[in-house]
Length: 488
Image (tube, rainbow, N blue to C red; front, side):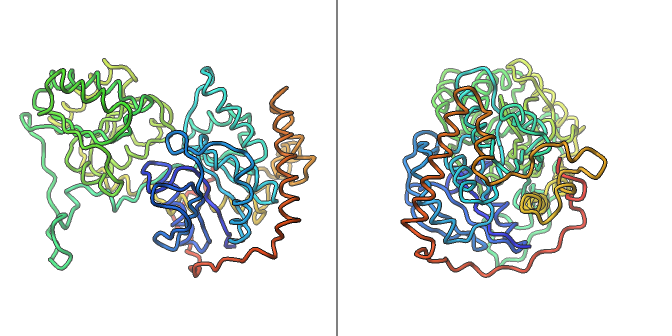
């Protein structure tokens, strides 16, 4: 059965990143499967109002004040009138929020439940439990997910983190990884047309992979936001040592952020401008062109729920050196990666090992693209997400969706099918803490009163229904789908 779905997050194009790409690719594949999908995000510079992207994906850019890293100022209630108008205009059935730090996401899930809509949340990040920022974020996540119908995480490590942070029933959290459009990340050995060749020209034959000799130069690529959590400090400390121990090596670094000035100062201090090329921020469609210039991809992140960029790097035929943190060890098989501890000495050692492995031709990087193409598919992600929608809507039975069958204790498994009754919602929020629980209940009551006021003074009959983009016939399920193997 086709659904009308609203993807809600502060993070979307024109900003580039893993969450933005995930929302776009998932939405596009769901449209291919016959569903109607819209995206609700905040206004970006030069982008306000309604926009359309490829495949008929409709974007609502809502003008709200942005405070930090493209996150809007949390207001709890002021978003409700606009959100209600959009949801009624588009006849939305399911609201799907993305990212723990997105104010739009948390507020949309609260308002959607008040309006009697089913909700899904996808977590893309890992957070700690000790520092003040994490404690506050975890409490807000608990508020967001206390009444959500189902949650999705991009890795098993991310699922464990989210279950602990939000005190969720593990059966209400599914693991659906990110994916990559492998055709957009082909290595040079698969390239049939150089970038400057016109479309009318006949394609060139595929290039043969070049074996790396003991004296050939090695290029290490880094594409990342230059923030502390992305391991930029480790990168800055490691580059001079890697270049000193491997003279015939150079770096290409793409990305921007507050740590860019520290990186530039390190290059000037060590006089490495001729061995390190800084490209600044690059668009997502340019990432492949940067990656194919290298042989090794270095990813020194301190925390990562999944790490889509390392899948893109492997698809481009790069050998990956990455830190063993978060969900990264789940992403690629061991023959594609060399792992390091998030420490300077270990990153230098792991990078040197990777360089030696390439020079001795112990690694067959020419096979990486075809292997990644078999492992990750956005079509598979869309099918598995669609099954989550079927479960919360009720198109499949709770026993089938959660994996419980008669005689296995389903009756005592708890309240997994969320009721819309206000008293039931208040019971769920009241257990969030001695003081926080009461505050959350107050927010829910106020939200409900605002909804009643809007229904009385701005009735639904006065809101015009938007014409939908012509639906596509539902795509058949792929035979190699992981849906039948379960979500958890």
